[in-house]
Image 1 (cartoon, one colour):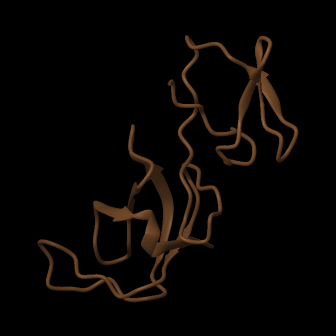
Image 2 (image 1 turned 180 degrees about the vertical axis):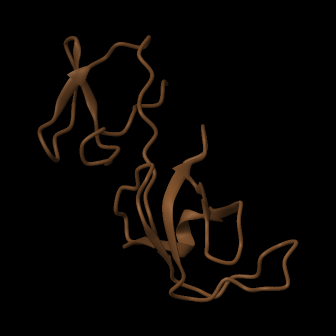
Image 3 (image 1 turned 180 degrees about the horizontal axis):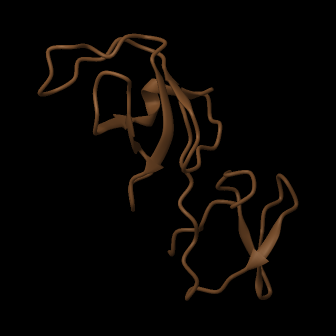
Length: 111
């Protein structure tokens, strides 16, 4: 049995095919079932908010940083984030003291 895609609008997986359209009964969104088009990657923070390139996020927990003796403290602001290609669980960014960070989205919230 093929896996059904989740709804691009609400993110729920309760979808079905209705003729040539995919339909989400939860939010009522309908979209074409074109397998050639690539669906956009959805990146969410720890609270479920959508993240996009250029957003500002805040660290919600003290984190040890590999290769650095300086920990990333709770409340640290990461500005102008970049999304990691093909990986919705990680983002890239810079803090004031540490450059070139790759962080898990489960430890971030949108500012």
